[in-house]
Amino acid sequence: MRSHAPVNRDRHDARVGATLSSRAFRRHPRGTALAAVFLLSVVGMGIGHGQALTVYGGPMKVIDNGDRATAWAVDYNERVAGPLEIGLLYLNEGHPNNHHRDGIAPELWLRSPRTTSGLSFAAGAGPFYYFDTTRDSTRDYSNDHGWGMIYSAAAQWQWHPRWFLSLRANHVRTYGSFDTNAVLLGVGYRWEAGLIDEEPIPGVTPTARNEINLLIGQTVVNSFASESSVATSVEYRRSLRRWADWTVSFLNEGDARLIRRNGAATQLWLVRRAHDDRVALSVGAGPYLAIDRRNPDTQRSGGERLAGLITFSARYSFTPHWHVRASWNRVLADYHRDTDVFLAGVGYGF
Image (cartoon, rainbow, N blue to C red; front, side, top):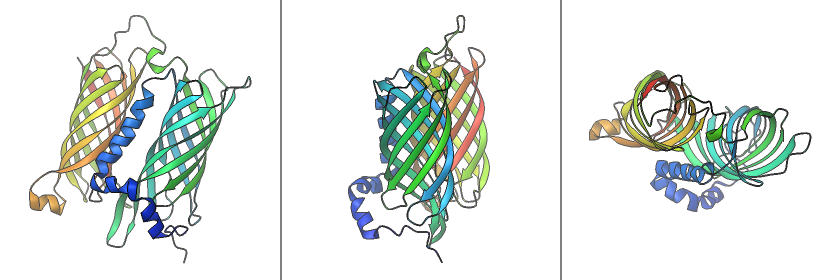
């Protein structure tokens, strides 16, 4: 029988190589991950002059044992200066045997000048923070979090002033998990002038600085059975700068058999706006103080448990005050109860 665990690297060597990076993570897993990803994104994503959003898909291979799966990714990329670019990648590596792994990676890129035919080439690298649902000998599954590196190369063909095709290769190397190679083909859209300057329309009033959002959707437990339940949320959002928001929210994840969890969260956000503020894309991170009534530790102590919350969100305003919002939340728990919470609803700005 073929083993599905990593076999090319000695476990002891993997633990030794990960000592420095994992020591802080073991003490504060959620805070370390959220702070690193968020701050690395802040460094680059507030100063560029041209942005691009690309959706990818393609084959992926596990180097350690040859397992194959279909991967997909979403990449936000922004030019900083000259050939230097920075991107924020969400990578889902599909379902190789006994693993469901995805992750987030801020990447630093060097890009060649575009040729007269629209071709350009780029190379990038950055830290990769992964979430892996895997089999565990002591339970049905476990949610493993960890660090690695991602190395990328890409060729891009700008066939339209806005639209382009992109072919990229990724090599993911992790500490204590499996390594992968992937080749992904994607289609992207570019804002050459920058999202904050994109296509101003006279007479459209920018949206208000405060929002109240009422959201409903679904919670999906990150297990192999993907237990689900109805989720709801109430969110207050405050615009701190044109590129930064702050939120405080109450999240009810519902009763998904393995969890029955709700609590309060606060997050800081990076925001990109378009079309006179009618469209806004944002990524946020912060702590989530929750009570899980199906967690024995919480039941015994009668107290809350601190988790991490990473969210991707999009808003469209159809009047100066009213808008619709959709969000994808990833809850990072330290007791193997990670969840994805998909929410959509209406909001009022004032």
